[in-house]
Image (cartoon, rainbow, N blue to C red; front, side, top):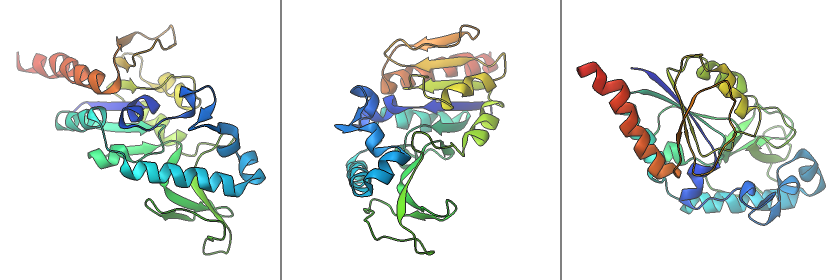
Length: 235
């Protein structure tokens, strides 16, 4: 099976009703993103940050995977699919994708503020002030905030460097280090980009554009991949 690596962003989750700050000029569900997604915001008002992510977690509980998520699962029948996502929801997993790497953390986990290795699955439960890790320190969302390192980027780069096919779905390609993954793709690896909007991409790469929203775009992608990589084998 060919290795199909998919980088997903907010565009795929928005079709499930989940909004991000990039839709409204630096606001995320009417919150200033730097107030709720940065170490400075956390230090300024922990209660606000916890309340914000508790709301996002409750919203996620009621959200459902959409056709974009499901279409990527379908591709596992014919390809070795690896998903690298910038999203903090669990919709890829709930749709049935078997290999998902979260670059920016995930809403359904909490972690210690003193020991990043202490991570707890909390599902859709809230985190409150006074909820402590086993070492007696406050829990925080297991989310990578602006200004923090992205621990999973090395693993993501390694995955991208072995891609036979690379697909980008619903991301503006301006958030680093995720946007830099395209630099790790082998030179002759075909790249597909699904987004209804114009997206700036490196001029040194040929990109196959599918100018559709995620659900419709993934459906077209499946047709193209089957035609190009599978049908040709049977001729």
